[in-house]
Image 1: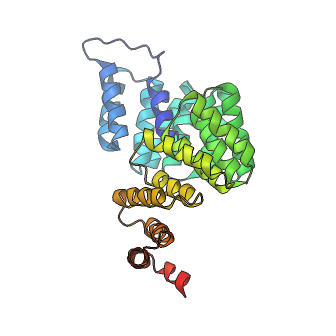
Image 2 (image 1 turned 90 degrees about the vertical axis):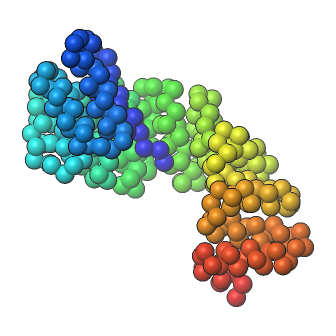
Image 3 (image 1 turned 60 degrees about the vertical axis):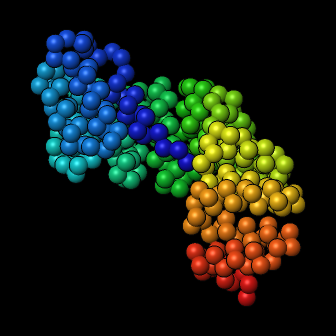
Amino acid sequence: MRSFIAAALSLTLLVSGTHIAQAQTSPLQIRNQAMEAHTSRNYARAEELWRELLSELPNDARALSGLGFALLLQGDEAEAQDTFQQVFSIDPGLGYLTLGVGLALLERFAEAEDAYVNAIAHEPEAADIHYNLGVAISNQDRPSEAEAAYQEAIRLNPNYVDAYYNLGSILSDQSRYEEAEAAYQSAIEIEPSADIYNNLGVLLNKQKRYAEGETAYRAAIQLNPSLVDSHQGLGNALIHQEQYAEAEAAYKNAIARDANFADAHYALGVALFAQGREQEADTSFQEAIRLNPEFASVFE
């Protein structure tokens, strides 16, 4: 599942509409530097920069939200709470969204959910808030409600790639494969990515549609050759089509990118054994067992 919380924070704090011009003190530059500090998770530096900006613009809701976020992530909940209370009095939708983002990063998903619900009460047409609500609910294992949140995000923004991606994942987990495939295909039509093609490959392999799975994994690898799971998935699609030499190459590509991937070593052994190369297969099986002793039970 994709989490959109970092991007949501960026949208929250950098959208146009703030009455700031690039004057001598360059408040916009300070804001950008603060966001860079957030991106690098240097929250102490972000706090310094937000305080600097607030010294010039004491009632700037986005700067106050950024400060509250930085304080929350540093564990200063008392001052963070006071800061968010100031934001709530100026721009409650913004304040609750930013609070939810911070709580989600701390994996306090029930509290994040409450914050997002409050944000939606003030900004019901904001697709990003509904998306983030879906992420918070998904992390509490309530797929039906998460699905509804993602669907609402898509209704508000029909080009919301990440919402389609997470919706596809939830539907796939419920074995609603046709709907999941439609969600992934919608995401691909908007903005193809290796992650989406990889998940589509997983979905197709689950349905034993191995030739189509192969195509999806190859598309993922073309977009991101370093994606280990796609090489592994490609090998699985190929081995079920009895294309053992190509499967061998795919598993070796996975191992080249992650030498400790026990599943790939085991699968490589299967591909080698199918080609009559029993000694090489045994070496791969032994390495799989070394990395994950549970594989030993396969040979008992």
